[in-house]
Image 1 (cartoon, helix red, strand yellow):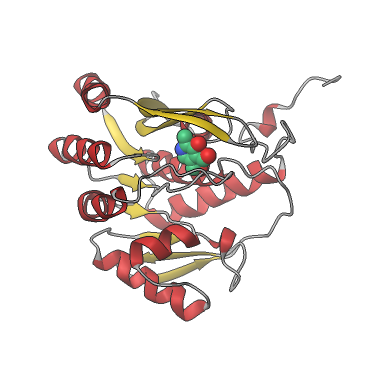
Image 2 (cartoon, rainbow, N blue to C red; image 1 turned 45 degrees about the vertical axis):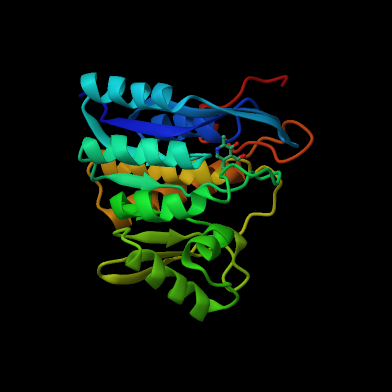
Length: 268
Ligand code: PXL
């Protein structure tokens, strides 16, 4: 049987830890086939982003159209969208194709602290992309910016989730990685209510690309026919294992390893 196809619309990370490079690994490790539309190229390693270059909007649009014209795209994930013009270009391209299984990772800053979404593009993301989303997957900071409130305790998490659904996303996962209230527990808001997905907290610096990996794995499982709750649980399982087997490469935040099961040869 052929694998279901997932389109990833995101930026490139030359360090291989996040962005498109993480997405490819996550989609393939989750049993789907990844197609890509690259929005921006970052010069990056585990320590810093030294340069970011947006591709022209028509080139981003052409990649999306080339993919849809030939493949049977079962789900889409968006990551780094960088600017107002790219947010709008991607939103109209996906709307034109009637995409329903859309996972939106509202990427705003890199692990090393570099802005990956312009300040004025947050509103465009909220207004143009969230209404198309099957699920949006913010971390704490992204949820605060999108929902417009400070998240301190559990009540704030619940209010933020409510507001994200009011913005038009059919579901939202507020990730627990940065939540002091419940570190490691993700909150999934959906039409049926709130599902808390407990996780374990793993102390490590190899966490570059965790958000990308998680969202792409959700898209892959949706493409394979899983329902939302099952897809989120499977993605959390994948990312937890990938963090546990993270690689201490470079001198900063190393990458996770979704392919840890393949093993590595001795002497490395
Ligand atoms: O993890 C968010 C992210 C997304 N996309 C690109 C990135 C990063 C984080 O560093 O570099 C290209």
